[in-house]
Image (cartoon, rainbow, N blue to C red; front, top):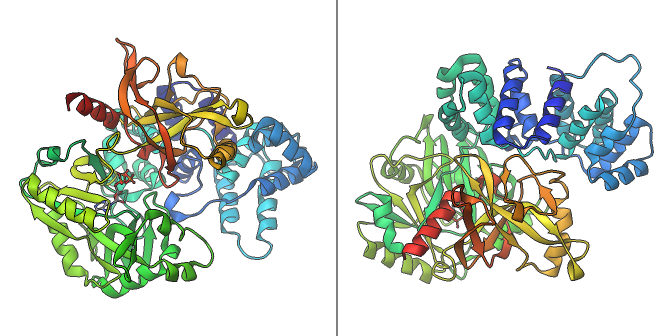
Length: 582
Ligand code: ATP
């Protein structure tokens, strides 16, 4: 496949206003890819060059992009920077450049050539690597047409802005190879356990559904984490969870960490499935020492525990480990403890389809705990009193709450799913709204007066999982510090687009001054959920009403969350219903 074919499809995706059209365009594109191209087409469409967990990214900053564009077009980097400032994007600046065809040109760029180029860029390291990256990118740019240059640069800088999500791509694969997007579930399952949409695509093309169903759990490839549901009254938990015996576990406020142990080789993945092994050398050591199975995949939370005072330190303390340098020193200052709450694989066997009691029992067999690694503390109960008692004891110990887990026979580990088998209950419930919402920023209004030069408010949306679109819930302008406000233009520079993204649904009253591709997630506190003609969350076409969050306040950015991990419109609807009923 020519890279120009891909670029022209991207150009059309950019001006598509419906998610269905987006899926149809992608399905046609994927159907035309060969076995060695289809995975690459998937990664490129998502703005990546490899599965996220591989950590392989071109890692090209604006300065290097400008240098490469300048080199390819024989112009001054300052002129490229000026064009990028004017157009708001280095990709557009590259497209505008006139480049003479290279001497001895070897014909059009192919998707596989571009991928090879980006892999070389991603793997370049050590002295002279910045220069090598510039030259490889410049060579590709020099051989490219204007639309191709736009996407080469956007891929290089990681700012694709197409707004295509994993589920859109899986729908397109189902449409291309299975006849309809209704056939997505088995593909989604394979994706949930492999976290590699390129692998799912290649397997589907080569060996059909049978091949996809046989994709195994693989060490060092993260499994998408199972998520928790919420309720607005603790008394709802026993009924919702639907099992006679309920396990009530301590809820830790740290970082979700999935650990893969393969002999002495240990890899740790974050909630967003990025490799965070280097952040936790101490946890790696203890996994090697204390997990007796040869191979295992554990799910748990890394927490900052102060052994001197016997208390847990807040999440923010742990986040200071998110660094490239001085990791060991900081690890000494902020000792981390790994509280393991699940076992997903052991000695070559997947445990995903085992019940929670079985998984927990096996976990206790293969983990000999010490002060740095231990199974989550818990109690087993059959009623509300048992839950409440354990919850109060947790709060007293400085924890943020509990996670209740079903012990039913079918309490499997549901990778990537948020179902009623795990329900959280936290200490901040009962004040204002029960729990904060994690919303996706899809636009902003220009700031006026004191906020001139930045954005005055941002437009926030919840994720509609069924339709794979984003529906707005509120505009938010409060809770920001002056520094947060000043930083908004930088934070959103890479995702600004010039029209309404296809997967975003708004009413005419909520149309913002600027649009953003759905990418950045923000945690928001609000007073209550009400019906509203302005917002499209759970939109009722007959009554022309959706749901809105009143008095939203900024809490913090959730950079570790993908837009599809945001609060869902179904969750917002459930919060609204329970408030009204309660
Ligand atoms: P979510 O992960 O549900 O989208 P979140 O990241 O905002 O939401 P919370 O809503 O506070 O986090 O709670 C869910 C998270 O709690 C899990 O993702 C996990 O990281 C953490 N957690 C802590 N203790 C446990 C436990 N015992 N069992 C499961 N998850 C736990």
